[in-house]
Length: 510
Image 1 (cartoon, helix red, strand yellow):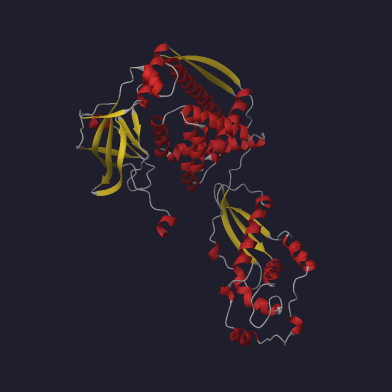
Image 2: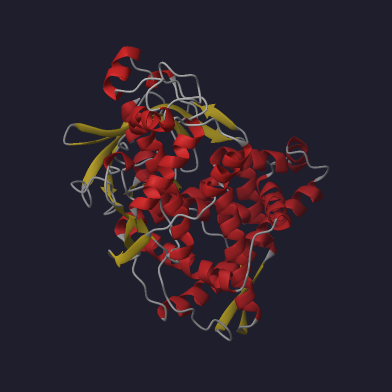
């Protein structure tokens, strides 16, 4: 660290305040650093920090840590900082490296207070991870600016941190499970194929009144008692019986929108979920106004050969094979989800632990992303995925708690079994997502980079490997189920809350 120009003071003022000159107090002069002294300084910085700490329970998955650093360590860190700057520190009346040590300390002690405090706290945090046997799942709750480094005596500070729940690992071997093996009739596949091809077909604007299955382009306003709560322009919505928001639902959306034309507006009642961020609106009914700018309809995909070429397939057979693989992957995911639920139902029943509500709120978005990865992996379209995510968001108090408990349990089991996500597994997962979504692996990787979602991918791989390990040693009874008729989707989901999110602290400051 080099002393900055901001450290400089008026020369005469400093000499008067110190009462020292270059001639006086010669025996207090700080000698220039030699190789030997530099080596000693470097060695001293590697000396582990000595400190004491106490850990107290502060609620479910929360610990309060009180750290006490003895005065001798505070002084040692100060001396190390002085050693770093002494050769280049600007002290009026003295050549660099020749200023008396006491004068150097007096001049720069206040400026070095924050770096010393930051080093002490950082080194304490680093050592605590091992010494306190903590498994933190959040950053420490403390404001460094409000912590003062005393001039005398020990340096003590405290903070809170959320940690993984503690529980005994349950016996997961030999669970009794029922595995549903799905098959389907030719009629079921044909209905699935028509549905998928319809979702890929081009949209055309029509002048006719809207029907179920059409799309509308519209501006949305959500309001209650004359107050606008949230809005979004240019949304494209598929007209289905129900429309869901992240924290609300319109049960009669299809009924209200059938017959609407360009230029018209329709108003619907929205039932707000109990999980709404505004407690005054939770459970109430508000209104949503839809101003329609266009009615869109899918172009019919009767000519499969032309459609196959448009989609990049060499033939109709190749197209059918691709969509049959997608259907098989989706059914395999249904089988896996059923086994996973049975496993976790049995294990969580014997491993009770609580979670703090602030953790639940903070982890909701992460769990939504994890679930989205699972559904994309199984070949679900965005139109099919969003209803699942909205259901989780609306029932955050129950579903997210369940998802978090599942995550912590599987993470603990995977650690005990040394299960990790290696690069080969991650590459395979990227390839699978690319195949299911019709994108290149490079596009998938770019999206994961942009969304900073690699940790979600790794966690999904680890959890899946742990579930598969449990299945390998389970007592499994198979049952066959043949799918004969596809149920029409009843819900359109919108990635929008009924209340506009409050700006973050960073956005407010900007």
